Each structure stands twice: as C-alpha cells, then as structure tokens.
Amino acid sequence: MISPAEYDALDGLAMAALVRSGQLTAAELCAAAIARAEALNPQLNAVVHPLYEAARQRARAGLPAGPFGGVPFLLKDFGAQYAGAPHTSGSRALHDFTPKEDAELVRRWQASGLNILGKTNTPEFALMGVTEPALHGPTRNPWHLGHTPGGSSGGAAAAVAAGMVPVAGAGDGGGSIRIPAACCGLFGLKPSRGRVPTGPEQGEKWQGAAVEHVLSRSVRDSAAMLDATCGPDAGAPYFLPAPARPYMEEAGRPPGRLRIAFSLGHPLGRALHPECATAVQDAARLLESLGHDVEEVPLPFDGRAIASAFLMLYFGETGASIAALAKHLGRPARPADVEPTTWLLGLLGRTYTAADFAAARHTWNDSARRMGRFHETYDLLLTPTLATPPVRIGELQPKPLEQKLLKLVNTFGLGGLIQRSGLVEKLAEQSLEKTPYTQVANLTGQPAMSVPLHWTAEGLPCGVQFIARLGAEDVLFRLAGQLEQARPWFEKRPGL
Image (cartoon, rainbow, N blue to C red):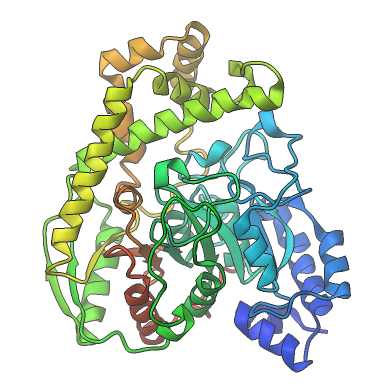
C-alpha cells in the first residue's frame, strides 16, 4: 500500500511510472485517492458527484496502458460530458441530467489511462470566477477555508491543491483554468483555440473563446496531458499545425533568451492590489536573473473594449444556455429554474441585437491583430493573473438590496430597461474588476498560463500570467519548466 505522504509526493506521471514498473497497482492508487477525497471533501466541497465504486472496478479490471495508466482523475461538472454520470453544470435545472455519450476529450483522457473518480464543483453554467453554486454550495480554498478557490474550475483546483488527485479536468472561457490556478497555487495552462477537440456535438465552445484542459501541480503533467489530447477530431471547424515535438519534451528544454514584456496596468483603470503587483515585479526580477530580456510596457490591448466584447459573449451565451433548458425540462425555463444572477444575465443577452454581437466580434479580431503586432517584438506578455488575491467566500454574492433588485428585474423582465440605463456598464466593470487580465486570451485564441510564483503575507497563492502568440504552447511549457526549477512550488502544500 502507498502511504498518504508517499501519495502526496507524486505527480501523475510518477504515479503511472510506478504502476508500469509493478511497484504500485492502479487499485492501490485508486484507494489512496478515494481515502484522501473522503477525508478532505467534507471541508472543501470539491467533489460533488463521487463515482468511487466504478473507479475501483476499473482499477481492478485494468486500465489502458497510456502515459497516465492508473492515475486517479476528476472531471469538471461542466463541459466535457461523461456518459452515465451526472452532468448538472452547477444548475438545479439539470440536477437529473445524465449524458449518453462521452465527449471526445473524455475519450482521449480515458485512452491515456486515467481513472475517473468523480466530478468537481462549478458555478452555475461555469459563469463565475468563484465556485459557489446554489445547487451544491461553495467550494473552499485548501490554503484558507474562508477564501474562494476561484472559478469556474474551482472544485478541480481545490481537489488538486488538497492532493486528492494530481491532475483534474478544467475549462477556460474567460479565465476559468488560470483564475483557480492562481487562487490555489497550481499550474494552469489554457491552450490555443483549436488545439483541443470539442466534439462530437460542439464545433466551438462559447464562439471559440472556451478551451478545455487540466489543472496540475507539475508542469510536465500538464504538458503530457496536452500531448494525449491535442489534435482535431471529426468535423473540427479549425485546427492548428501539430507541434514540432511533444510538449512533454518542451517542458524539459531550455527556453533560450526570451523577450518578455510585463505590465502592471489594470485593464479597467482600477487599482491593482499590492500583492499582485509584487508577484509580477518579483517574477520580472526572476526572469532577468535567468537571462531573459524583460521590459515594462503599457498593456497592448484596450481593456475596456475587451471587457465590453467579453460581456456581450457572456450575456448571449447565458441566454442561449437558459433557452436550451427547454429541451431538458420539456417547457421554457422559468426564473425559479436557475439562480437570480443567471436569469438576469440571460435577460440581458436578449436585449442586444445581432448587429451588437457582430460589432463585439470585430473587437475580438482587432484585439488579435493588436496582440499579433505586439508579438513581433516580444515573445511573451507577463501580467498578474488576478487583480486581487483570492476573495472571501460570499464576498462577490449579491448584497440584500441587490437581491431585491434582481428579484424585481427578473419578475418583470426588465432586462431592456437595465441595459438602456447604463447600469450594465457599471455592473460589468464591477464584475470584472478583480479578474480583468484573463479574457483577452480567450477572445484572441492565444495560449496563456498562470504560474504559482508568489504567496501573500497571509499565505494565499497569487499567480502570474504569461500570454504567448497563437499556437506557441511550446514556448510557454519551456519557460514554465525553467521557472519550476528556479522557484519550485510542488512541495508547497496547504496545511489541511
């Protein structure tokens, strides 16, 4: 048997290597992971759909001999569907929904040898940067139980940071891999648009803004997972050229001398928390010590234009998600079927026109061109991942007066009035004030990563973000591997 300390010291690839060599069995790893989850989940509320018995049976029967053969894994309860398992998307409207077919990404994860133990908590329809759905309740940050693990992949991040599993599935439509990575002291990479399959049912997720991958403690686990899943599937609307060599190799290669620009500007003109500024400044000094050319620059994109375009997508996709509930419910959705904030977002989505949405998409294209010109000079852009350290549980929930306003607006369908009043712009800036740095890479399609290089004086993780040119995950993995060696974080563990 493997002890808790021995289990905690291994990343996914190390676990798989021990299984291949016969020093461990998949059943022993499965038992250790379930024991850890059962011990810690009552505090964290990270796993909302345990699938433990099925995982035990797979471990005993034998798993595919892939690079992650026998490694325990958790799926996010949103996005990649797993046949026969609950798929609530954090919504009470879907509390009894069970898909009949695996997503292509889940098939590839299973083919790599991963053993799926269950599904992790997410905010309703993955809409928030915190994980506090009414259906399942809040997930808590293992580093400090009073704070959020971020969102929308907050359950996945809490589970990995707490050591339940070494790696877990996640998705990123506006920062939902990078935000929880920053909050929980993990490595989180959002791949380029088109790098990871979205089938068999979807061609694009969130108009191409959303990409799925994983959260991990080690860089090499993330790289090997992308090796196992990248490449187009049948009917893919677009795809990128195959990488020159496996990403796993890139994670161990020297990055060379990179030209890295950093910025401390807040995209919405607000104040940046001092700890987040310190994280970037410290990272810049570290990069210089490693031989890179580092220069401070203004942000190379229009933060307010990005926020406006992203929120147009946000409102529209929420409205579409609510409309799609009719297929499951057998009737049009009603306000009581979803959370009040979700219903309001859907109302707002119906107040804009096709011309409004087309204009927002022009901002996507303009931003991609701006960033393309930026990368003619610089290899990478370094920013904070977040504008503030992890907030407290409940801090971003509507206050009592706001709850009354939400009820009034939703009851009388006043989305149009709210939109015309100018209140949307105010609410928009407030909602993105703490997470304004991640959306640009979703709209441009670029790969981006959050790296855990800083912890606050209170002991909370505070990640930094690197954005690369489209298709340049190799550059990110090479730098991440170098940073992991120079400033190791794997052994940093929350005191649970």
